[in-house]
Structure formats: C-alpha cells, structure tokens
Image 1 (cartoon, rainbow, N blue to C red):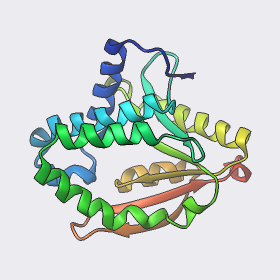
Image 2 (cartoon, rainbow, N blue to C red; image 1 turned 180 degrees about the vertical axis):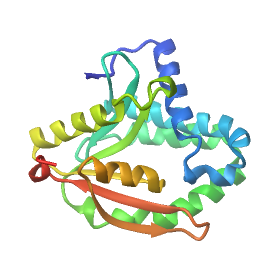
Image 3 (cartoon, helix red, strand yellow; image 1 turned 60 degrees about the vertical axis):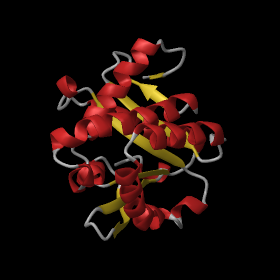
Amino acid sequence: MKHAEDLTEKELERIRFVTGEAFVTNELFHEFGSIEERRPLVLKYMSAFVDFAYESGSLYMTDDGCGFIGLQYIKDNAVLPQLKMLVRLFTGLPFGKLKKMLGHVGQIADADKQLKKVPHIDVLMVAVNKDSQGKGYARQLVDFAKKMSEEKNLPLLIGTDMKDYADMYCHYGFRLACSKTADNGVTRYVLTWQPSDKTK
C-alpha cells in the first residue's frame, strides 16, 4: 500500500475512472437516472471527489494500482481542496440535478454528527478496479485503514448509502453506529471501527 502522490495526469485520470465506475450503482445517485443515464454524471462527480482526496493528501492505493482508499485525519486542514471540489461539482454537473441530490444529502449528512465531534479518521471512499473485484482488495484496503487507526489510536468512521456495503464493512469488523433515511428513500449507514476492535 502506498500514498498516492506525484501522480501524472494520466494516472490520476485512471483513478478517477475506476472510482467513478465503482460508484455508478450507488443509491446516492439514483435521481440522476438509470445506470447508463447517470454514468457520465457520476464519473464527473467522483472525479471531483478523487481530486479532493488527492489534493488533500488523503488518497492511498494498492501497490499494483487496483484499489484506492481515501483516509482523512479529521484535524487535517483541507479547506482549499474542499472549495475546489465544490466549484468542480457546480460547474461540471447540471445544477438542477445536483441541487436536488445535495438537498437529500443534507437530510442525512448529520447522521454521524455526534460521532464526528471526537478525533477520528474518515474513510472517504473505497474503490476497486472492476476487473479486480472479488480478489480481496477491499479487505486489503480496509486492513490498511485499520492499521492507520491503530497507529494514531483513533477510531475509523465510514458512511455508505448501500446496504450491501454496510453489511460488508460489518463483516470486516465495523459496527453499525446509526442510520438515517432521506425523503427519497436513500439511507445513510454510518459505521465505526475502534483500535480496541483489532481482534475482529
């Protein structure tokens, strides 16, 4: 596992694509239309998110470049990358659709409000190359996050809008801390892992 830094634009573009493809079926984006209709919009959305993770120094990848994870220590200052991400989103996506989606995101964004009051590490995203899925990469990425959690003695916090992913993280030793459902039926699942849970 390595920190993603000094990447070429070509390498970064590949990571954007892999991550976008990994999130196309995410429930968060169902208002963008069918899978095929939403694909270009999700790719743009996740491209901005990948750039945020990379520019804030939060992006890590497997040595072979097949899996990626965003890990952000809550005290890290990432204001400028966040502002850049918002500009990219609002200039790259149809305003009406983005506004509607973000409105529903706002309804569930505070699900982890209490948990975020204490120092922690945010798992921003987990993405695996489509051809490499089912080969243990997700566990490898999560194990890396756990190692960082142990080293900093801070809990991990991850949110997902997919029940299957929430179940997967529970299988990896995470605990479902809370969930909240928006008006459009999308549920946000918030999971935590503590260094004291390392036997799991």
